[in-house]
Image 1 (spheres, rainbow, N blue to C red):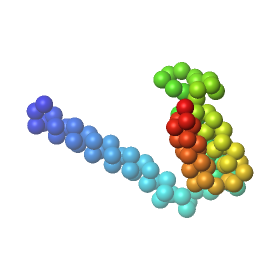
Image 2: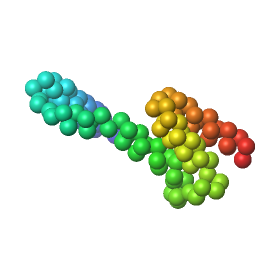
Image 3: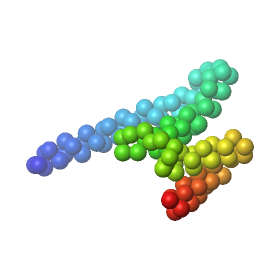
Length: 110
């Protein structure tokens, strides 16, 4: 690539990064002016759980593009144990650590 092409790519990256920052910052700057209902605020509290589920579920159930069965899949068993601990303790750290310990132990055994 020539120097002008590098310059165009660099300027494009800088402009896209700045545009992304402005878009995100606009919500933070305008947060005081926005009126939100209690229902909407309660709805926002479910976002972390939904994002965590969206990240963890594919890692548990899919392996090399296929849905795994319970037999031979330590991740499903560890996910069930972690879900029970999350339900019982409501502690995110305990949930993550227990899931990692169980999957590590089951992989070591099998």
